[in-house]
Amino acid sequence: MEFPLTSILDIGCRTGDFLLHFDPKIKREGIELSKYFASIAQNRGLKIHRNFVENIKFDYKFDVVTCYAILEHLEYPIKFLNKINTLINPGGLLVVLIPTHQCLKRKWLDTIGGSWHMYSPPEHLNFFSRRFLDQYLNKIGFQLIHRFYTSGGMIDPFPKIKIINKLIKKIVELGDYGWLKKYAFFDHMYSYYLFEKN
Image 1 (tube, rainbow, N blue to C red):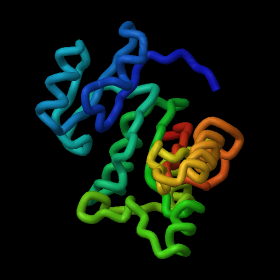
Image 2: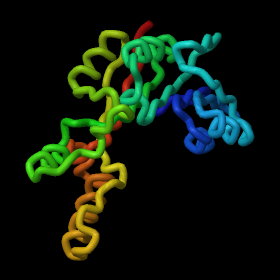
Image 3: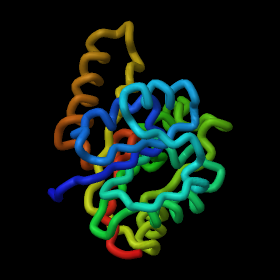
Image 4: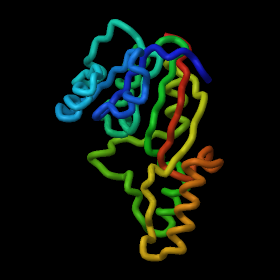
């Protein structure tokens, strides 16, 4: 899917690295609560809002809104998603990255008695099933158009056993960059939603 991009909002933008990949001629804005990270992003020429998205009044909408690794940290994720609904132009895109418990990696860890690193309260407060996320976003005007999974680069279970480590790295490579990424082997789930209505 391609469309002329005129604006993007990155929620939880940290130092603005992601936004800097886009042409400076488009409107590039971020939301970052950390004063330290926000100041770095601002010094890089980006417009940064230092508040919760629910408290910011925008007079305009965006073609793309991204929230990478945000939803799982929120006390009120539904309120957050309802606000996002008001920020995207019709035909615009919402990109969400969340950890998913519905993956082979977590099931495998459960089987061998390991612990999944994403279960980390109070840092991670919420986990969403694919079904719930898709149904709720559909209810407020979004249609899922693409989904894939990656490892997040966080797999190194046997650093001292080189042959096993090499095999696992090969599987991770297939999962992150190859055909495996369309299946829920790993726990980083990227979902792309098209906004169809207000």
